[in-house]
Image (cartoon, rainbow, N blue to C red; front, side):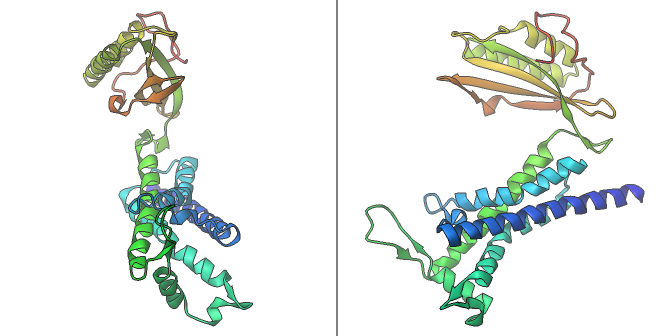
Length: 292
């Protein structure tokens, strides 16, 4: 019972964080729209991707992430609906704030029409500039409702992205704590094939429960320092639970494009360690040490 009460309390704190950032984000978006004539949330890429709403929804839901990390609460699927629902509700909150702030001939617009009538009028009179060579803005009419649905979906997607981010972070289920960074080891490669082979063998050994062997393989493969000939890197990152010591490792592969290193998403790997590794000491084979 005590465990359940503690989880409910932490879940409430996280929800309050999320609601707070939702309110602040909505207020900021309305301010930019009314004062700067910049409706960031309304930007739709290619008329089908609500990029502005997705970005706004992500920022609005960021409080769930920071709250979860602060109190070490990993949201379950029960909170998924709350996060996505509140994020999608941003659309109605934004229109309500505009409804309460807008004035017509010096009088609040709420004295002229109801909130529902305002939303209906605003949507059916939404106009788009279809392109630089178009004759002018095109009023959507009843298509404004489809536009509204697209924005609501975009806001909800922002909430989903935050939920996925906080759910995928390494977490010690036994202790109820998010894991903290412990150390890392990096190697550089000239050929992509060598990098891919190292990843494949590393994953094979680790899945057999031979994490130390996998680390020794990584340590003696490639080179420790990057130079002009090395265009690929593979970093092993360790995180651990500060209470029980449970470890998690993740592989991060990167490719150098011009002067910048970019992640190679197809070669990612993450797993909880079945074999304890002392990341404060160098591996048995190889010239490198952990903790880079």
